[in-house]
Structures are given as C-alpha cells and as structure tokens.
Image 1 (cartoon, rainbow, N blue to C red):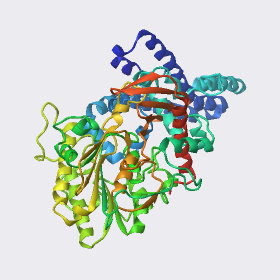
Image 2 (cartoon, one colour):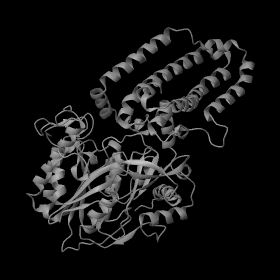
Image 3 (cartoon, one colour):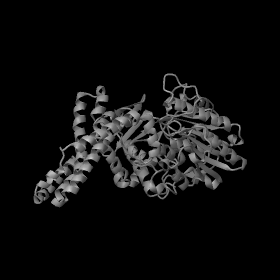
Image 4 (cartoon, helix red, strand yellow):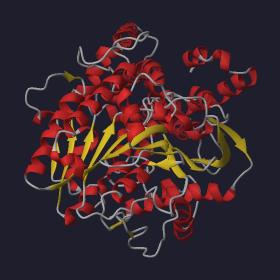
Length: 610
C-alpha cells in the first residue's frame, strides 16, 4: 500500500489518507489472521514428540508466505500500471499460461523481476540464518495449557478474519469508501485481493449474484426485458424471437467478424480518436457503416468474443468462454447459421487453448479452429503468435476456397498483434514519431495495416461482393482512470463493410451484441435467435450498454449510468464529456442493472441461452 500511496500522493487529501490507512489496516488484519490459523492449530494441537517435524513445517510455511508476499507486492506495480487495479482474478488467470506470460514478463519487466527475485533471495537468506522465530519455544508450554489457549486464540483470529461484528464479514468492498477508484485500490491488500478473487471465482450462482442485490427472477426478467426492449414470452427460451431482415436478398451473404485485439476508440478518427494511427479504418469509415458510439462488454478478450460470436453480455465472475455449462449447446453464430448451410471457422494466430477459446468454439458448433500450429512458414512470430498479416493471408485463402466450392461461410477472425510486448514485423509501417518502436501506437498501426491488407486481397476475390465484413474491437487497450467505472475506456470502434453499402455513421449508443445483430440483419435471412441486442435498422433498438469492470457493472441508458458492485449500494451517475457525475438515485435504472446481472447468471446456470 505504501508504494502505491507514494506514487499517487498528490491525488490524495489528508482525510482520504487517514481513511486509506484505517480501511487498509482492516484488510491487512484479515490477511494476517488467515495466515496465522495454521500455525495456531499446529502449535496448540501437536504433542511434544512432534516438535521437530512441526517446527520445520511451520518454518517452511512462514518462509513461503514471506516470499509469496514479496512477489505479489512487487508484481502489484507493473500489474497496477497495466490494469489500474490491484492483482485480481486476472492475475490468477494468466498463471495458467506460463509460456506466453513468462515470455512477456522476461521481455517487458526484466528489472522488476530482477529486483523481486533479489529481494526474495535476500529474505530467504536472512530468515534461514535468523533465530528470531523459533517455533520450538512454543512446545515448552505444557500441552494442556496450549489446548486451553486454542479456543481464545481461534476466537481472536476469527474476529480478525471477519473484521466486522455485523451480519456480513468484511471483504474487498470495504475498501470502496471513495468515489475515486484509484484511492480505493490503494487501500486494498494485494495478497488478500488475489485470495479473495480465487474464492469469488469458485462462487458462481444465486448466492454470488445476490451480493449485487436481491431480486426475484420474475422481476429480474421483466426489468431486463424492458431495458433491452426484447420480449420475454417463453421462460424456457428467454429473449428468443424471430427477426425479419430489413435487407431481403436473392441469395444470403457470408459473414466475417474480424475482431481486433485492444483497438480502442482513441486510435480511430471516426470514433473521436487520432487521425494518423489507423488510416485503413479511417478510410473504411468514410465508405461504409461505422459505429462511432460503441461500448465493449468488458475488459477481457473473452467478453468481446462472447458478445461478438454469440450476442451475450458479460456474466459475473468467469466468462462463458471458460465456464463449464457453456462448453456446448450455447448459442453461437455457427449454431444459428449451420441450418442454412454455412461452414464455420474460428481463426486465431496464437494458441487457441488460451482462455479456452478452442474448446468453446468447437464445442458450440464451429466446424474448424485454425490456430498457430496450422500456419506453415509464417513470416513473423511474436510472443503471442503469428503476425496479423499472416493471419489475414490464411483467412483470405480459406474464404477463397469456400467460394470456389460454392459454400456459404461464417468466420470469426481474432487478431493478436496489438498485445504487449507489441512485437511487430519490420518494414511494414512508418513508425509513429515520439513513441518507442515497440509501443501500443505502432502495434495498432500495424494491426490497421493488416486490416488494409485483408481488404486489398478480399476485393480481388469473388466472395467479396457476397460477404458482410465486421471489423470491431474486443475491448480497449488499457481500461484505466480514477472513476469507479472508467466508462470512456470502454469506447471502441466498429465498421461494417459490404459491397454497395451507402456510407453511414451510427452515432447513438450501441453494444457489441447490437453490432452482431446488425451484421446478421444485412445477411438477408429471416433468423430466430436470443441475441441481447438489436440491429440498428430495427425500431426496437434502444440506447443501452452493459459494461463489466472487474466485479463492478455499469448499466448505461443514454447518458445515465447505474453502477452496482457486490455488497455496495447502487449509485446513479450522469455521463458527459467522458466524466461520471454523481446524480440522484434512479431506482428503475439501478434495479435494472441488478436485474441484468441476475438474468445473465440464471440464463447461464440453467442453460437457457441456446
């Protein structure tokens, strides 16, 4: 806490400083009390004859705890710099991918790793040479006395772990005392945050959802139906309806959804961003249909993939791409279009096992998953896989093959070049002045170059005139800011490219499921689906977006935003000029936010999204 506090000292008032240390001490007490339970139990219950074994075991336990504490606290600084939060569930998620994360850490954080391991080594040496902690001394106390002391000691630890005499024990939500999110994050304890994230990730279901606010399912579905403006007629198939196309055609079109890793709105001119970073996107924006007021489901790729491949919104906790009950029979583009004769594919330049993408796509009807191992002699390979140019060459070859066989196709293509450590091929772009070669700006510019390369190839092929192309971001590059939910950092660009399309800028609020519904509308088919969004050409379209930031949700309706989080009372804000301003409670919007979270979990849990 002290290091982060020192970094943000100028942003924190004296009163906030006092509260930060008071609330921080509470969370530190929880962490320390949890760690002391095992030593207390062993020292109280172990007879004298077990002195040597237990003393060695506890010495090892304490040393491991110290080293883990040092590592996590050191990791907090780069993690905070990247995500603007203390280590959380994402910290644990990345541990599952040692190859990619190990390479990233070595390339991006050499100094931090060196300092961390040096501190750990020094601590281990001092601890092993020290006699300050001698667990054998505890065994000099008579066994009966230790047994008698056990209950009061456990009681003290129980009070410390709860850190509350109220109905609910203290947790990370107790750090949320300020409207300045950064100050709240500084208040937390990193080890406690990681442990609590692991605990929370295992608690899906109604009990977990009720922490956002209790609500009967009937009310939740009714409010969600009104907010989304989607009828709720069949409880066994909620929000499932028939959607007639606004663009009937003699022959249905193909569909390609090209998802761009971390391409935020600030990099694209038509969404209010820079003019010189994404020339291809800027050009497409003047020639086709663009979404200039689009907001992502969340801050992780799997949230965007779910939104753009299935039209689902961000479910609390672990995303549906990784959850067990959504690994099959979950609605996707493939299950929708397969009855119409479409061949389906998911194309990714990296290892598709990452975030369980391969299993999810194949388990939910996609015919093929093409990943890094399927690229022969790629021109450039980075930490995360082959470059985006190799990706689009592979995609174009597959689409050309489908076209030659007179096969309709639907494909989700997922780029990866715009990802730290931002490794891109040489001599492909003119690097942006004033920033390092390996920077997010240059990575975005290279991703834009690959988009241009794709359309250069596609326009030469027969399939181009019969295909709807969507180019859209999964999320922004780095969601950060002092606000409880930095809404402006969910702003992303999207463009729909189709031969003969009249240029249009859709400026109203939209979500990723809206983009998917619009693309499907342009195919020329009458379809039935449960997508939680509308085509922008439909009269049913409302200005609604649901955004997930860690375990906090923001439900935006036009310029009003309701924010909910576990064990915290909902708040209403107005959103203008990229800023949230606290406003009077809008009970309907706040209850609708709770309803959306409740409904999403229920649809997943009962396998109703199909």
